[in-house]
Length: 133
Image (cartoon, rainbow, N blue to C red):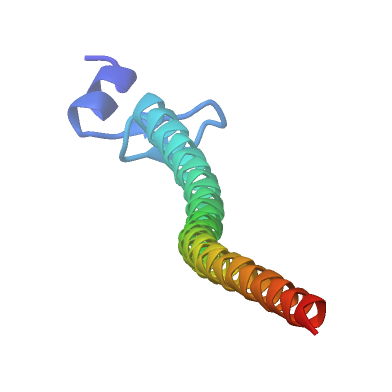
């Protein structure tokens, strides 16, 4: 048996720097490579988590703004309904007032016509009395 085979059978390895190792140098290299990839993966995961946290914060702020705008819109809609109702009420009051004024005008016209007739009758009576004297 050769010296290399004897060492391998004992579980000893020689690396590129001619140091004796109890783990296969290729396995050590693969482990280091895996460790570095793991560290890189964790860093990328942390960066991704920061991006997600920022995104969540932006979405939460947007949701607050949307909710605020929604509440303002509801308030504006209610205010508009109130104005519309007041406008309708004002129109109804004005129609009622116009109707009352028309009735008063008609009453005053009738009274005026009556007074005109009475004046005419009295004038005729006065003229006839003056003519008789």
